Image 1 (cartoon, rainbow, N blue to C red):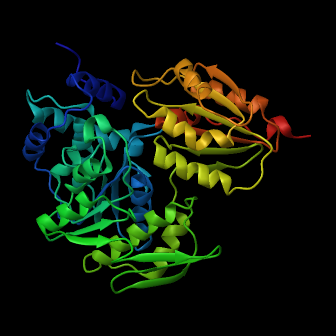
Image 2: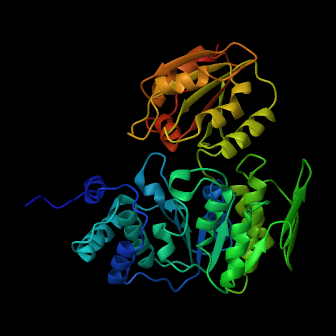
Image 3: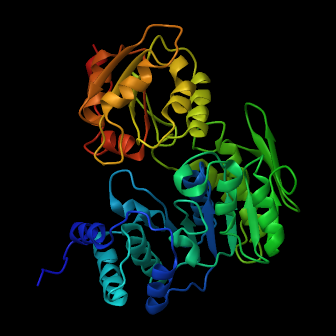
Length: 432
């Protein structure tokens, strides 16, 4: 008989061995185990799906709700460094001691039912939330929506953020296909907030077919702004003279606008004040989303890993001002459309530092180098390969001048890889 898991690391290793597939697009198994566990919520649940902007939207919802005095549980994924990042209670990662009883409960309830890593860990986190005194639960959907394990929970308000081509082998080859999959997190009679300004028609059609209360950006809520401030208007509420969110980047206003629509739609259950909105947007924090690290050279961390998010990263970098040279640290999954992704950022990069990642799904540094070298370019670039993200960043820091810029982007594994052992002291090399 094998020794039962005792630590969180043991449980996660156990979860990885349980099911032959990382992704198994069915809900029957996970729903059956959830029913045995009695998983249900008496507080409002917000479910957030989309290709890009899910994490930022979840973080804004959490920050605003907390500033309004609500106790919030947030399930967000994937993690950058520590698994516990996926389970936040009142803005703090749940600790190992809090999580372990719920892993044990899932194991006891599943019997001989196989669960994937994502299904098992999600059930443990949902049970953690059930046993915490909460006023609101926010759940980030992973892949798609219709067959994502989060969809076993009936949402009180669905949010669909920007939709673009990603995971096409699972979700279909077009935005319309992907939109159809994500639209299935909506529920009849419940608000469905769509913050994508040009959503696929399939999203609108599904909402109408099931009788969801559809809120469309530009129709039911809208935002505008200048360089100093922005304003938002919904069906009945307005917020004016808002400061820009602490999460940087032009795309964050789309996410903030969707978050404010959620709170108007749920106003009867979760009333919030303008002060909570202002304070929440000012305090929201989410590592790896156009995160600028203080010091020299300038360091930017961004988990952009598909064409749409890399295009937003390129726009944000372009608006930062002049830097003599830009050094890029890049690692990505093999299933990404690398030419489309690289085309967005290549014009801004002078030196590429390409790295292997600690997962079988990743493209090798040599494969990434071949993709970079195949790109048409106006200016000469240098390309180096490295064993891992930390080595790539160390080489970029060594090569950069104080006035230069380094951008670390691609997979969560890339940004997590440079954060895992702590960032280098950027200013130390360039002082004196």
